[in-house]
Amino acid sequence: MDTASVSTTLGALVADRRRALGLSQRELADRICQVSGRTTITRHELSRYERGVRLPGGAMVDVLAESLGVPAAVLAAAVTATLERRGRTATRTP
Picture 1 (cartoon, one colour):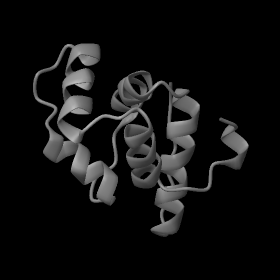
Picture 2 (cartoon, one colour):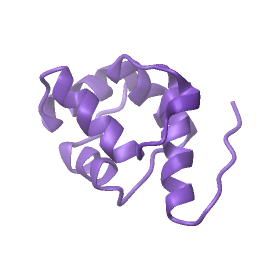
Picture 3 (spheres, rainbow, N blue to C red):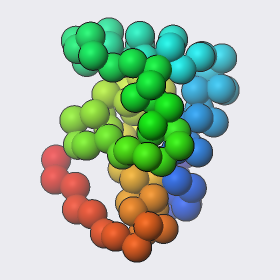
């Protein structure tokens, strides 16, 4: 994936990639828990990301990217695209 061509929202990107991997929201949540070492990520949280109700922060973008098998820069660009569509801007520091 080319980060320069990302114009989709984070929600659409996460949902499309999850479906391409053949995962349910619960299965992806379980994968995220394994990658992050946290047990508090639920399918409800993923649903919020996919619907655009919430956006992941810095460390969660990295975990989500690893769990979905996409570069973190692609997800970060999608977060930025989502914020721009909302009329906001964001800065992400490594």
